[in-house]
Length: 138
Image (cartoon, rainbow, N blue to C red; front, side, top):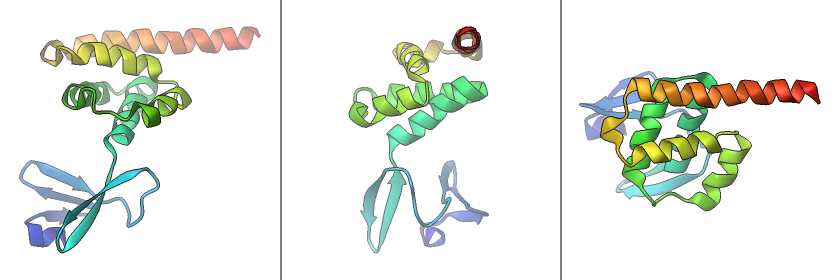
């Protein structure tokens, strides 16, 4: 179906110029939004899911590129995030602090460099270590 739209397939990925689409499976576990483009209907994972995953990758996997992507997403989405869904997800994944730090950076994304993100990551991960040590003392 994507080939009819001019996309080229490589495994589960489709590309058309700089547009990149991933089709992980026919069913989605995460919340999705439906888009009709007759004769097809697309289920697209909600932006809040992608943002949550980028925050997890940034804080817990130390992937600075995910932090950059999260800043760009926060800058683009502004206040159009479903915080009723997202806030409990952030708490469950222990990334509320990363969200808050990157929201502050998203106000001026042009000045967000890899060094800035690495400093934020160092602070966030330092808290993880402190929390783990405090947990051992209990």
